[in-house]
Image (cartoon, rainbow, N blue to C red; front, top):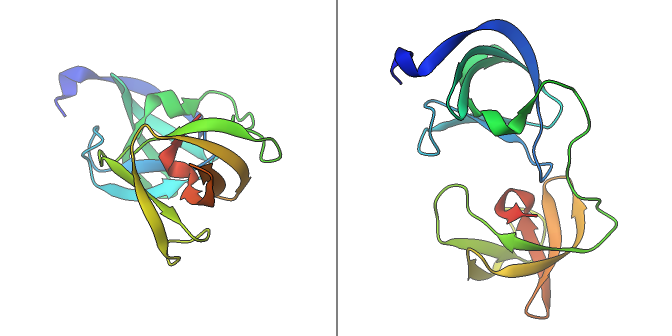
Length: 151
């Protein structure tokens, strides 16, 4: 990224805050196309090194990279993830740019895929445990990673 698009920030602390309660990716470049270095859970403290348009260059847990600025908060408040005890409607979303999301038999990448649904499909979220949601799609119950849901 060209330095003219970044401003030097006073080293300030911000906190990961996502709408789904899923971790926020730290990337090698200020873009959804940047390689994912790792992910950090809501509430994780992040040191902002430079601010850019939509992306911040940060340091966290000894690593440096880029995080989407809309998912960082000046306060260490609780995550805004929906309550796991109430059902709600969501849509499948793929922040990696894919056009489908896998619907699985259980809350793990090791579980069998029941079906793959297109991004934008409406789902009813029945519960959430850690980073997985039990959902109903077209009358069938299965699991989707919370990473692929948009409230």
